[in-house]
Length: 312
Ligand code: COA
Ligand code: ZN
Image (cartoon, rainbow, N blue to C red):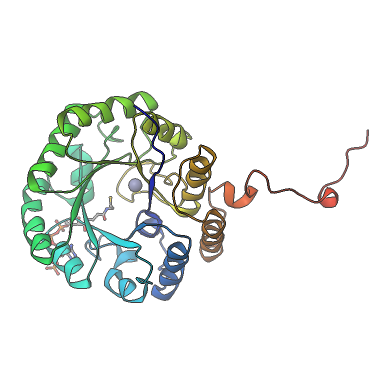
């Protein structure tokens, strides 16, 4: 498999990142940050969720946020939806893409959406009907695709079974979510090959968390398999509130930096993206994991008098 020459980077920080923030980020601030991401050239932003506002109060303003964002530049606005009610709200708000989600693990699915995997999948039929009527494409995300913090190993056949159901329902893609950073390069290769073989119709997106420090190593494994869609959060925000030990997504700027240094196009302006990452760090008032936003690009040179000379 050849490494792709161009990769689609999906920004998920405003959803996967903001959802775990306890203090409500004002709607106007969310809009400002999202518009900076639009300005940096992100092609797709998973910008919020239409879930129960009691489950995730931070994202209760999903419809209002969409009213304020810059839709003139062709950035697609995707939202996460768990059920028919979410699909109705998302369609009414006017999202460009709906993403349904279900866990490969029964226990995490119950924690996350209070139902069995089978019940989630059955509910997606209604989601598809609503989305089809509104002309909105639907992608499916599989949480805990590489392991579950409650159950441990997740069989690849279970991931494959869900992906087949997504295909049969008429979804346009499948995302493998590594909810608590349990993916390894070996598992990435295994799962991508399995899906390629058994569900070749569905493009695969990879969604890694950097919980154990090998998020970008897993991207390298995905690239080696020819995968050309990756999800990431600006400044490395992120984490699922309903999974033990969940931490940040791989960081969008660090990912874009890596891809550009590998000669892979993204269409993203790294400098502007770093500006958005530094801004969200200011807004949240704490140091965030992103590294390139702090260090700058590789060839950013420093004045000689910036640091002292060592004298022995
Ligand atoms: N948007 C808004 N409200 C919703 C909703 C949606 N998508 N789905 C359900 N609700 C409301 C119902 O209308 C009902 O309200 P009421 O009590 O005022 O009548 C209430 O929530 C309970 O509905 P029910 O279908 O019984 O839901 P539940 O309590 O079993 O919860 C979910 C199921 C899926 C709604 C909830 O677990 C959820 O939103 N989970 C999201 C988790 C998440 O975002 N995780 C992070 C992403 S990986
Ligand atoms: Zn995630």
